[in-house]
Image (tube, rainbow, N blue to C red):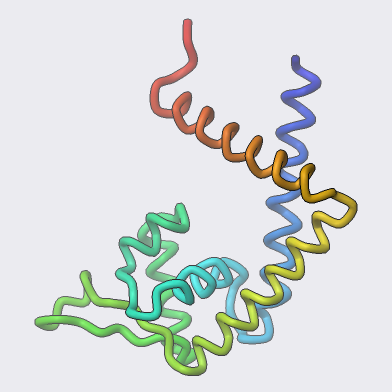
Length: 150
């Protein structure tokens, strides 16, 4: 059992490290940090805009991380904040045309990385892998909320 735990932990850590390296390399072209990649690809799915709170919720990031990334992307002209009644807290974040182009570029590169990362897997193996990963995430989420059984 410990061997499986170590294998799982190390594999997840390596995937995480490699993803951050790939994202950082891609975002360097825009003079941004790698974490902006997930925000851009997520915002791309919301052409009508999205609040910073919802963006953080979807991406699993805390408020301060989202705030730093949003400010950096706004300075680069990739997004604008559309606020109602001068309330920036609930402002809709919308990609500019430059932001949409950057998000599309990052989205295509991410799809390529995922495709190349899964090289050698059959469609059935890929389907089983993602279903298994989803199950593990759900189970670990429950355990993290409820704690391990005694």
